[in-house]
Length: 228
Image 1 (spheres, rainbow, N blue to C red):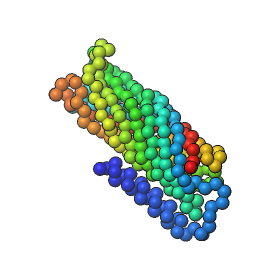
Image 2: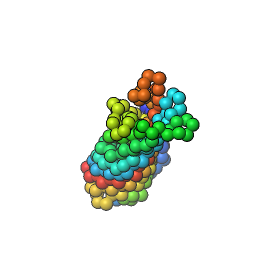
Image 3: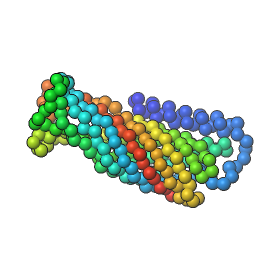
Image 4: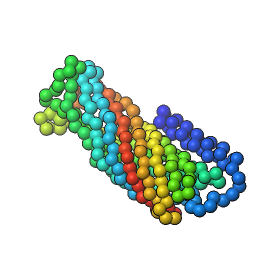
């Protein structure tokens, strides 16, 4: 519910800003390149994360998955007469983010038998974007809902226990700049922060060891798209 409310707030604020500014702008058609229209593109990047697991009795590990990812994105922009650009966009990526770490006890000791690992298999997002057109350049901010397939588990002497596998949802916020290299070809660079929250998990230490796992990530991505 919190992620839905946050995404709705981001979209409503972006809409109000663009419409309010458009209401006081002169009734003219923007000259030169116009960002209005749909687009579809390819993207790739590198992501690093913080994933903390803690059991009920204080045993913890930080298997922070990191790695490259790549996928597709598509969206639609509308440029107002005052050069504000409001858009909506969705993306989906396959991910190579992986991490493996030792497990530590509350007294500072280390579990010599087990290790904890985690990985993000895929991720996606649905976001609202608010930009400002400066000719063929458009700096923008964006935010909305995120989803990811997250897997984690335990190893003992390189033998793997059954893994925890679930689809996690969260929220994201970011900023970037886009450039219209031609009237049809758009290139971009973007930074994004994503928070998937903190969730209960049942690791195979037994029923007396319930745990909680959190996941946040940062990424830098580059993209190229075709504008319709």
